[in-house]
Image 1 (cartoon, rainbow, N blue to C red):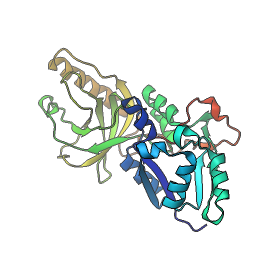
Image 2: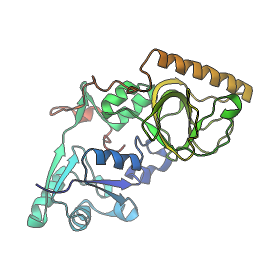
Image 3: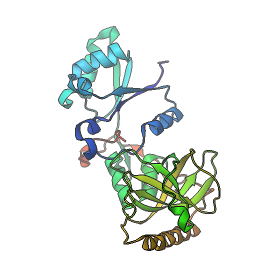
Image 4: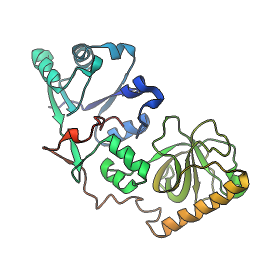
Length: 303
């Protein structure tokens, strides 16, 4: 068609607007989502503020005001379970009907088929379940890439330095968290250099933190990371978050966590290779006859 490719996203996501902190955790931050879409060949990412005004639009009003007059859509691609408009009354059939009714001012529409991997529907709900169970290899197969977190390193209490385990601390503003606990990780620096390490993701109950943090200790690294943006790939879950009676008990456990993480990497791929097995893994396929109702969720595009 010779048209630019644009992706429309909502911020906040509709589930967050309606459910607040009870909404499912995001799998990707908006910044990261925009980057990944750009790498996939998308020309524009259009971020629409999801507010009371947008929520109250009927399905037809959304199509005519937002898609046609606002964005000038000529061809629309949506998921096979896409719902929109007040009370979620709009669907693929309504889009096709309105697009055709508008004639030359209208648009064509198609839907993507449900993606499946090993006859299992690929959905954000399933990915969250895999993350919670620590199955990062299967998570990577479903995403088509390894799951990762990250952020800009900030100054914090520097408690790790007092026990010989300095950490790069990155705030995690989105709640709830997709992951919590202690993990063997691979940390990628801005220049692409990678280091094995161990990380705590959560609230640090022993020291009484008032915000969630990603604290990563890099093995065999000596340098200043403040202000740098790091990418952290969880590779194996070591344990859940715990509250210890005193700092001495915490220190002892941190040493044990480091030993377990080093043991994991001694038996697995080093940091200078890809941390998760993607090259030989089959990608998710389109399933023409896959039963989308097998998974009660309808959110494979909400991460």
